[in-house]
Structure formats: C-alpha cells, structure tokens
Length: 297
Ligand code: PPS
Picture 1: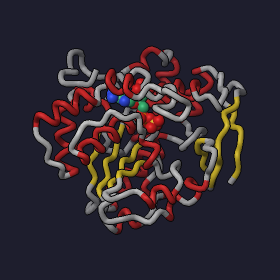
Picture 2: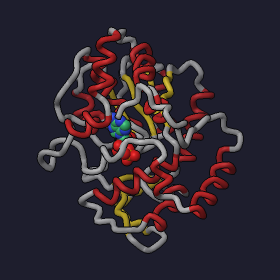
Picture 3: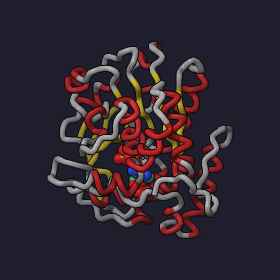
C-alpha cells in the first residue's frame, strides 16, 4: 500500500492511494480503506452502495430522513458513515440502525454483510454521466490540483486507472454477487429512474426500509431532497461544514452529450457493448423528453 501519483493520458497527475492493486482516493488517513473488511457488522445495519457519482449523497439523505421520520436541515454529509473514509471507531460508536455507505465492491466488504443478510440499497447510474461527474468533481478537489483535460481523463477513467477502478468491473462484480446470494435483500435504484420520477422511487425505498411513512411525508421528502434544495442546503460554509465543492453540480441525465465528442462516444459504445455482453443490466443513458414528471429539479 502506498501513496502514488497516477498520470492521465496527457501526463497530468492525480494523487491516489494504492492498495492491493487498486487505486483509491488520497484520503488523509487510509486505515479505513485497508481495514474495511474488518468492520464489525450488526444485523440491522443498512448499506448504500454504488460506484462513485451514482447518487449516493441523494439516496443517503432520503434514507436517513425516512429512518428518522422527519426532515432534516443540517449540513451533515454521508461521509460520517462512509466505511472507507470515516474512522472505524466512529462507525463503531454509531447507534443502531446504522446507515453506512461505500463505493466498494461487495466482494471486498465484510463477509458478515452477506451472512447477516443486511439490507443493501444498490445504486446504478449510466457510466457516461458518471465519468463526466467524476471528472468535474476531481477538478474541484482543492488538494488534488488536477488540471487535466477531459479527453485525457475519460478513457483512463473508463479503463479503471483512477480511484475505485472501473465502473464495468464494479457493476459486473455486484451483478455476480447478487446472483450468488439471491437471499440478500437488495433494492436496486437507478439514478435515471429517480430523475424520471423520484416520488415513485422514494416509495420503493420507504417500503424496502420498512419505514412506512405517509404520502404527505414522502411528498415533503421529495421536495426536501430535490437537487435545488439539497444544493442550497449543503453549500460549504466552512472548510469542514457542508459538501465538498462539486458534489452538487448539475444533477441531470445526459450531460455527457455536452462532453463526449463523436469519436469518444463511438469508442465508448463499442467498449460498453464488449464489456456488458452477457450482463442483464438495463442502463439508460438518456430519458425521453418530458419523462421527468415528479423528478427532482
Ligand atoms: S460521490 O461523491 O461519489 O458520493 O457522489 P454521488 O453522491 O454518488 O453522486 C454525485 C452526483 O449526484 C448528483 N446529485 C443529485 N442529483 C439529483 N438530485 C439530487 N438531489 C442530487 N444530489 C446529488 C450530483 O449533482 C452529482 O452528479 P453531477 O452529474 O456531477 O451533477
């Protein structure tokens, strides 16, 4: 394990932490990455899992309010329960039921999650928007000083050279693990479905978590977790309060069209077809026009 500089295709460096052949973010303390598989798991732990930039903040926010049964106005972010980031003694000190989150593959997480059949909310988002979101996020990270160009970032990101590796390896690993463990309670949510009709998706989340909130509460939650409200509410107030810059960026489906040049798109589509052959995942890269009724704005 070591701190490394990973170069993009144009030679611009990204600082990362390397562990067991995989790159991770360059967090100030990295014990939580190295020891993630050792976190003691409780029967009633709830997990939100997804590749970075799949909507984790959004779903974490909705889930914690469903569990609490009230809307919250604080600037607390999901980092408090992020297994590879938060100090593990802090995670140990959390009261039950704990709402934990991670960008790790299931196969690298504590085996007790599967043994104890913990509830998992699994998030998916189309990998073109994920790449765009990740690139813009990294550009804004103050300690990264990354100035690389999109065209030098995209392919390397897709090929898995940067933090958390490849979206393809991640989703295929999860698909395989879910098939291996059909007994696991997993709710799969797609970012695109949430953008299309988040009230519908919140109802699914409510039912999965067993929180059984009223329609009135769900409508209020829908407003309270809309992009515009969250972006405003979570604005950084001090260097340690609120969201990291760039977390709440655009919150749309299809922004990739503003970034992918035709030849990049062609390369990507071919790569996607090759890698996803045999996968049953249905990923939507765009939404039909006017398909965003009930969507968060
Ligand atoms: S992280 O840092 O990996 O945990 O990021 P993550 O939270 O998974 O994903 C960040 C993207 O989610 C968008 N986002 C939202 N979209 C719609 N509605 C709400 N409320 C919302 N909250 C966050 C956020 O803007 C990032 O996407 P982009 O495309 O960059 O805007």
